[in-house]
Image (cartoon, rainbow, N blue to C red; front, side):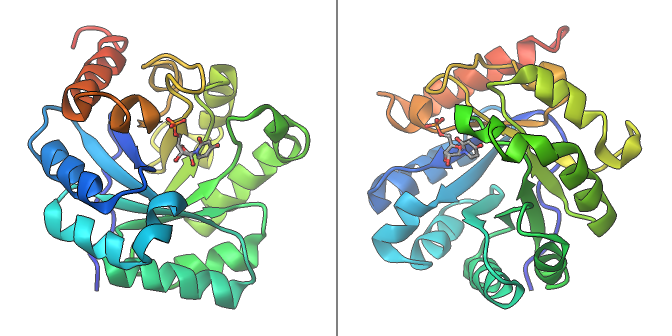
Length: 231
Ligand code: 3DU
C-alpha cells in the first residue's frame, strides 16, 4: 500500500507535468529531486495519455518527491474509485477529483485509504465563476466533513483563496492543504496564493517550457517564499 499524507502542509511549488514526452518528464523529476526548495509533482492527462499509467510508475522510479495524479476525476463512485485505485497502484501519492460530483463520490475515493485525495473547489479560468463558484463554501464544508486531504483554489483570484482558506474545518489549525494553479502562464505572480493562505502554488508551463526547468522551479519557489517575509 502507498504511504499516505506524503504531501506536507507547508509552502512549496507543485510542478505540473503537462509536457507530452516521457523522457523530459523523467529528466525533470530527477532534477527536481536535487533542487533547492519544497517541490511536488502533478501528472496531468496530457502526459498520462502518452503511455497510460506507466508514466506515473516511471516518474515514481525517478524521484522520491510526492506525486499527484491530476485526472480531475468526476464520474460515478465506482468508476471514480477505480481510476483512483489505478493511479495509487501505479505510484501516485494523491489524486485530484472534482468536489461537485457529490459526497458519495468523494467518500468512495477517500475510503480506498490508498493515498491523499485533493478536491477541486474553484478553478482558475473565467468560466469557473459561472457555476462552480456559487457552491464553493458548501463544497469546502462538505470536503472537510468527509476528510479530504487537500483542495484546489485559484491563484488567479487571490481574494477567493483568502476567503475560502479561512473556511477549512472552521479553524486555522486545519491539516487540509491548499494547492493553487495559475502562476505566470495564467497571470498570477509567484506568492499570490501562498500569501493568502495557500500551501502549494501549481506551476506548469513557466517551468517545463523554460530553457532550464530546474533553475526556473527554484527561482519561482524562492520568489513565492520570499513574499512570506523573513525567509
Ligand atoms: O497554466 P500552467 O501551465 O502553469 O498549468 C496549470 C496546471 O494546473 C495545469 O496542469 C492545469 O490542469 C492545472 N489546473 C489549472 O490550471 C486550473 C485549475 O483550476 C485546476 C488545475
